[in-house]
Length: 389
Image 1: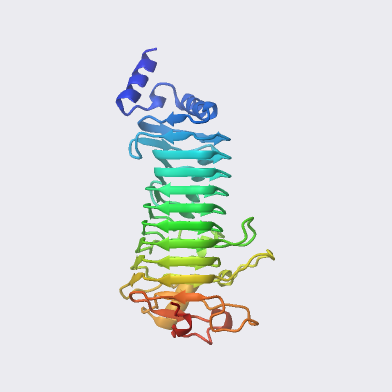
Image 2: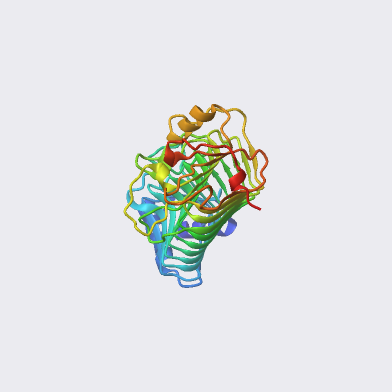
């Protein structure tokens, strides 16, 4: 009884109090999981201040209108260090009108927070991180909504993910805004999404800054209508520590923005500075050299618009141990153009710009079309065919 009273008042007064000092880790897990399972539609699950250790995942399924709220991201910390069971720290399935806010998830064995098949889900003021030296043994994704409709990620931070700190995949109506991503392989990745926006974010010290990918063999076949604007994408030169075989493992350190396949992607009003390999790369899936069998997949980027950005870079050596970086160095030394377009399209489609790659006015917007599908024989820095109003 005394323990219950002390714990109750610690919550009421906002005092940091770790449940496992009272009941042990297994009892903590049971109590928290009970809160998740027994939550009624419209409930708020209040997480007290303190550092709490969990050997297994926490999960929430089939709920509507539930809020999971901590005392603040630096006050409520859910640690999954040494996690024994489960592939995520927190797993949310088939929920709607959800909000997760004001807490931290760290050192999950797999992904930090995964939400799948949800409608209208918000992450606000949430931190996911892996402490210590970034490693391929870290979880793949920090915030990981996939196959969702209506995603808002606002004021969040992600650190240490071995794939992408903030990843949204195969989803519709997505907004990622005012977030920070650092020391991940990819800072922010939008993959096979429709109607997505990344705005007002600070993306720094990752291997790649912001990636807009469209990949084969996935249920959503064509990502489109993606806007990347008003972000600071700075010094993403961190070593790539992705596990072998991951496609992001092919992203050379020093990549600011990469658009791989997809349609109607706009990159504008960003500060893209001190990314040593490519400030903005526009490439087809063929540049990866990977085979695919998806007959409905279109591997070429189409209707990509790059304008009104500020590109800056001191003379830097590209990441020459990666194919794109080595090519850039061999062709341009330390003066790689800021905008790289691989220029790959089927031989039966006439040029010079069949897929409407549009380069508007940019500060320091130097450009090269590599003609990578033709052994670079048609490499050109002439941007004229790509100038669009």
